[in-house]
Image (cartoon, rainbow, N blue to C red; front, side, top):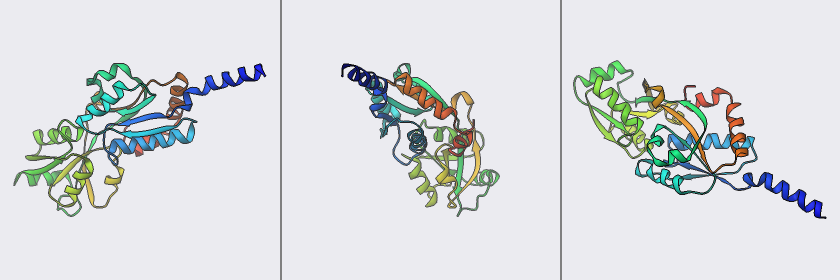
Length: 243
């Protein structure tokens, strides 16, 4: 009997790290690009490991709410993030697990507009300001709009709280164009209501998306790494990443 109890104790100790659900923090609202890639990747991990996850959306404060939560938590936690996280103190407390790839921004216009390519948008900007929608100030969507508007177009920038709101504005034609990050945006790019006319690329060292972890056991990290490293690159390409 004593030996049986010891065996069960050893078994529990070896598997205790996987018994607690891993929190997955999203620094944006449900339905946005970051939320989409998080849930797609977590779905894959749930199918191919014995790990359990719970996705928690912590939008607001230009990601500070999510970062502060991550900074203070003692639970096993994951987060998919871009170079923005390097600016926060939590960056020193997390471990890099996997690099999903590099992203860019996609310039979209309404299919109802007369604009079918970038040259036509440039011609229009010679006649009037382009009403250019983008996500919050400092976001990659905003940086993409600045890149075009400072060098190529004459623009009036209109910030939106989320990509979904920007897409509604584009569909309603209250704006001429909207820049959206490539990752997690397939539902917009494939929508026949919009036309993608240009890709705006960033420096590779400033355009990665990586999976980071905190308070995870070595065994759990290895399980996650194994699944993602053995995943076909098409999975990440279809999510909007260059590998």
